[in-house]
Image (cartoon, rainbow, N blue to C red):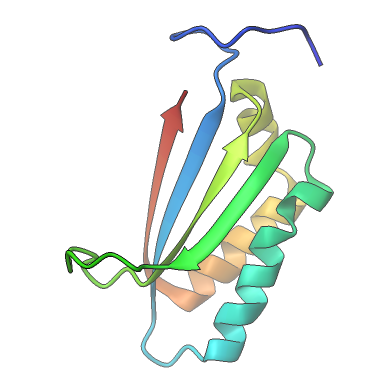
Length: 111
């Protein structure tokens, strides 16, 4: 890893990869739990994935628009994100999400 200080606008910024999920109506809790385990295991398989938080919405605002679950992946920097996206383990998880979900929202935030 290169010595890199996070500076706004630099390639060294951490990236929060935010993913919100709206599952098909027939998806079982067992399928959601299996997906959660696969998502949470991503740091064990992909270099640069620093952490993962998974959960269902607990917001009292009622603005979820049908998105019931989501996760945030903290990536070391842009290079880690660029390596993560085509990684076969990520692709397998993304394919499963595509099978289980009717809508997915992805939003990256640099910090």
